[in-house]
Length: 361
Image (cartoon, rainbow, N blue to C red; front, side, top):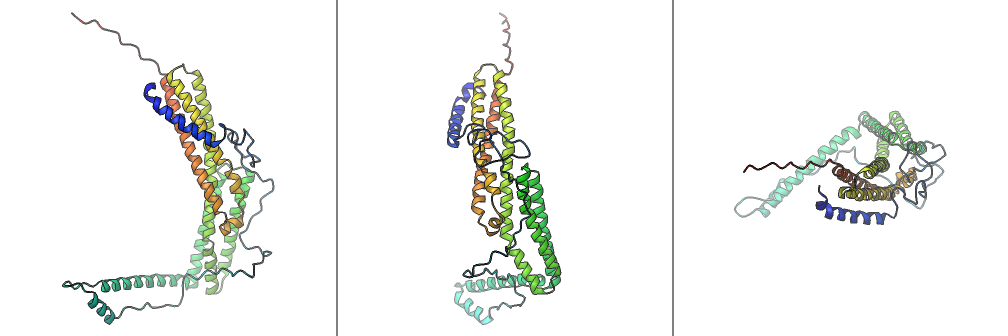
């Protein structure tokens, strides 16, 4: 790309990213006032992080946490206990079908002139079809939920599946690069959930009545929203760690480009490369400002907040901030790529001028 053809593009991008950097309120690689001065983020991680980034660390050993109710916390007698209605009934209830006379009367009343078509008859037929399908669904449920052997097998499979999912999340977090203490916080949460599920499986395997198994099913179904919340929690932590890893890579790339600019000859393309590098630093700085507070706020969430859904506001906010940080990372990579392209043009050997040939007279 030639220098003159890029002036407008360079000016626009530079102006936009300067605004971006101004809104971030931080200098490149120094969120919170410089390296190691990020308020509220003490401690360090197991692997080196970019300048100005830190993971929160708890010095105490994290115990295995449980989502089971605390016996010392007695329920408020003024509050009505929440009761989840049963999702099925073992008493077959036949769905009444429309009588021939009523369908015939509706058909005669709704016939279109000369066509023998009745909307009422069509609606009645559709209603009967829906009722028949619902009866089939109810019958299939009853085969499982109204039989001890089938229900126990279903519960064992669902519990084992959730345990495997939690173990997979633990493996992903273990590879994310979290510090040892922060990793212990997450492992303590996941281990607590696994312990609760293992206890429920033991209970299911020892039940002797269908009613007890149905109650166990209700217990597991009642925790579905909690598992979804925990999944969001794990996802937000992994997203934040991905931005931190990207910051390390971008810092290395910045240093490489800066050295190449210093060694490049003075040329319009070299000046363009410096502009792109400056914008790259602004984008990285904006990403740092977005992601720096996330680990502290996410790791401060308690098991009780995950269980009752009160952590959703924090999780939603963290997801938005991580998404913005990821966007800034993509912008920084684009700026770095453009800077390298300009340097390649600036250092490319000039083409030798063509030797004029004599024109025969």
